[in-house]
Length: 429
Ligand SMILES: Nc1ncnc2c1ncn2[C@@H]1O[C@H](COP(=O)(O)OP(=O)(O)OP(=O)(O)O)[C@@H](O)[C@H]1O
Ligand SMILES: [Mg+2]
Image 1: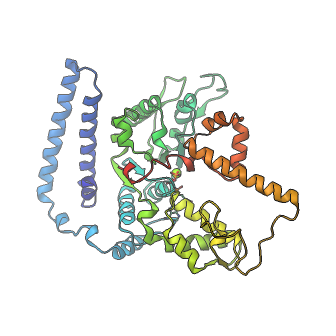
Image 2 (image 1 turned 90 degrees about the vertical axis):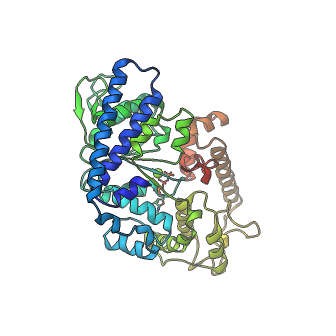
Image 3 (image 1 turned 30 degrees about the horizontal axis):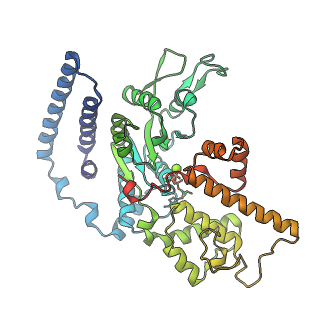
């Protein structure tokens, strides 16, 4: 947070953050070193002397910077004023935000980080808006008109990772029928979004670290190095610090990626934003469905204001879309998905009293019941295996691609089931 306070207060901030990054890298180099030979020791000494000089220069500069200290910190201002100020500065944000102090803090950090080239790490539970904020950082920065390339590190098989990120040369491996650019090259000049970075295997972490240090890549099967200038934004719903302690994530990479660290609060910690999101998604759904925005009965509103939203904003969005699709003018508890609906509420019915047509024949009724059983089964299964489709396929002795088809049919996304149990607030850094 200190780095960010400094960023907020003037141009020397970037060097402060750079300095801290160097100190952290030095620290983790030492921590990971198996043994230290004389040349290593000399290198470390040279680095620490250079650091000392930089610290002295900064402290000298600091003595002449008085204006910044007089400027009030943003957090002294009321949330309403801070929100207004963000909007007045034409902060580009493809969503809605209100006066919640922790969200404002995250957005102000994103805004400050956007015009720099510093790496940003965004964490937060599933569905809290990490990808949205990554796009916000890109859109508010100087690279906005350059490519934004998103990579889901959790979805790439280990053996394809290097080729996916860095590209390959024709013939580098079976199936490499031509030269191919990797994501880093595609993002040159722009931003690369490394989503689910916590899922990157250790071998991939080493390769990524090398690229971040040298700012150049080598395509698989090629000796030539290619310079790349891609701004890194990474996201995770895991606690990377804890993964570092467990030896599953390299600490040096963590420090490289988290020069600026943005944590998005779960929806249960920004409940004051819920009414605003009702309106935002209500309007969005109405437009998509070409209908009038729904209104909610008092009991439904009450229920939704107090519901814990384990899937955060994504879950709220899905609920509002569902209500907008199923309800007449006014939505009620009975339009809620069955798994969250209060037990005493009957099956779905139009709010105007007319029942939504039920199955017209016995075979339709059977099919509907079987579909529902299938959905519940898959949801439970995904929850039990923490969203790992391969594992679920193994447990059910089912072909993986058939399982994927079924998941698609029910609109279930495996990533929505990852870390649900371990994503409580104690998981956050
Ligand atoms: N403040 C917001 N206003 C409007 N929509 C939002 C807001 N925050 C998130 N959303 C929407 O919620 C959904 C989930 O957001 P996003 O995909 O960014 O979450 P995430 O944190 O990346 O989730 P995951 O960890 O599952 O990948 C998206 O449809 C996104 O547009
Ligand atoms: Mg995401």
